[in-house]
Image (tube, rainbow, N blue to C red; front, side):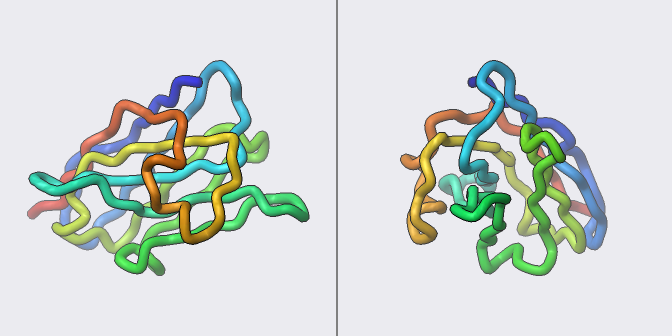
Length: 128
């Protein structure tokens, strides 16, 4: 599976951006996630969509983005999106999408080792 992330760019504080992550090859993964890597820092968890036992996906978010970021998948459950509003300078980072066929427990969703496939990253810069 190859993941293609897109939609990054330069935006002013308070602005919005929408990132997309499109897989090629195997098109279905039980869990897809977004991570980001701020300048000079390690990769950090943003949020994930995890397949629910009863069907459908449910989102999990890092506290730092809760209420501002929304993760979704299209109707075919293929492409994942990250809608970001009320952006802050501290949201500046390279954003990566990731996927796995596993269903990690909630506490493991933020662990980079749980994910088998990664996109190439897209730069988001929040600055006036």
